[in-house]
Image (cartoon, rainbow, N blue to C red; front, side, top):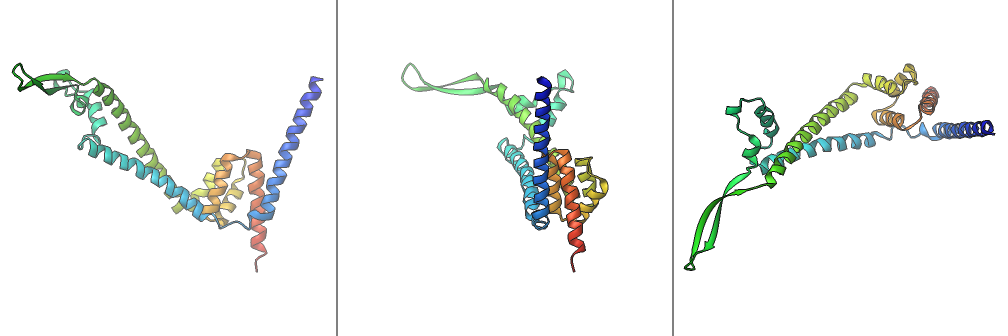
Amino acid sequence: MKRLENQGGFRCMFVGYSNVLVAVLTAVECGCVLCLQRHNMYALRYFVCEALCLVNIIGQLYFMNYFFDGEFLSYGLRVMAFSEQAQEDRLDPMVYVFPRVTKCTFHKFGPSGTIQKHDSLCVLPLNIVNEKTYIFLWFWYIILAVLLAGLMVYRALILCLPGVRPKLLHARNRMVPREIAESLSRKTEIGDWWILYMLGRNMDAIIYREVVSELAKKIETAASNRP
């Protein structure tokens, strides 16, 4: 009984996979070739949004540095250098930016009713939390800025060097033959290539291989039928 149930489940899974494959290939055959060369603006907007993320991080670094009177950009570097200094030469940059003790002036009424001024030292316990929070933010912003800058260089290579596109398409799914990846990369524009590349991240590997293989055939047939 259990064996029959397992076979039935496998049969349902196979039929479901076949239906999905047939539906995707039908869509490729009917309309995908006609929709090529229409995705350049989509890819451009995608890349611009990624660039805006880098602009956002740089802007936050700039305004944070302005808020701290020019002390934030070098804050993390000075904290790292502080741990390597000799004990007698140490000047804690966290205490310099976020002082824990400060001079306070209190104005109180004296015995005769006049206002008297009292100077004292005030402890600022919240700055102990602030200095740790902002050192974390400094490292977080710097890491994001470096990663996003590397991503922009990577996107620039994709845009400026078409020769790397078939390698990336093949690397996305090793089941796609290299010649098919080269054919699609050569005969599609950057927007269409980007759509195919993103599909490889969201589709089953076997279905994706069948889709791009069928699409390459359709593009080849459409190109040969042109007058």
